[in-house]
Length: 110
View (cartoon, rainbow, N blue to C red):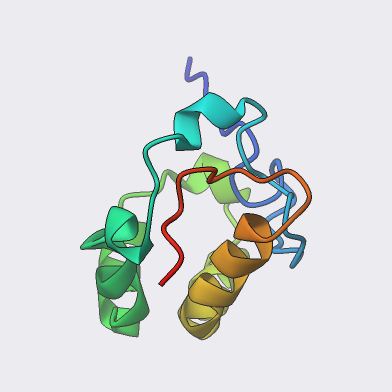
């Protein structure tokens, strides 16, 4: 038996990516208190932005088939969408940062 808790990863199992500033973020702001600039996201942010589709496929290769319903087309769509969305990461972080929620109160304005 396998138990998997994806939380809200990939829109809570919908395997979709709504572009909403507050969608899928942790509900307690204190976890973001140390974020004070773009440097707080490095090197992961640049790594994600520069990732090649083959790198994403390498990660996806280890996903159990049960997770994507034994549907290789669904997995292919997920990988392709992740690859396309790399260029949106900074915009999504910015939308979250400037939202009324004010998740990064220590962000340094330059």
